[in-house]
Image (tube, rainbow, N blue to C red; front, side):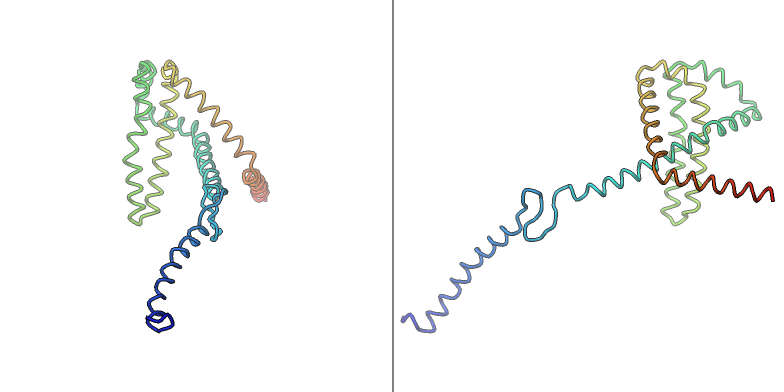
Length: 215
């Protein structure tokens, strides 16, 4: 058939398209490959984990702040709640249990010390169930009540069982590490600008409240 006929032109056209498609796909794949810094060429979208580092750093800071606030709450309520529990046990005539708790061997003291966390776990799960069911206020109140009661019981049990617990070498080591880590965390929080700003605001409102009371 003559080379210039319409049939020859129509039959050769698909061959050129088929040949150009793999070349275009190769160019597209070449343009979309990641470079050495983890950025996808042709798109400008970073694919390396470095893009998540600021987010992870922010989440870590928020978690540290929440944990520090929790520790500060426990330290604030440790002695007052423990004394309130002592007065309650005196009213209920349960003070006779304290010498027996002090005399427990180390492993029995450890089991008793861990019991409140296990006993309050269903209560906290129920609080989460309330929140999931739309009863947010009720769930939060249950969580706060469980935290207050748990702090009071753990503080008193710790005072009564500390001597026995320290006889467990691994517990004594972990206890020392926990105290050192807690001190560093609280020092960082107290040195931050939100904490200092809060202390200034608290002193300001205390002076203002005192002036209002004096009239």
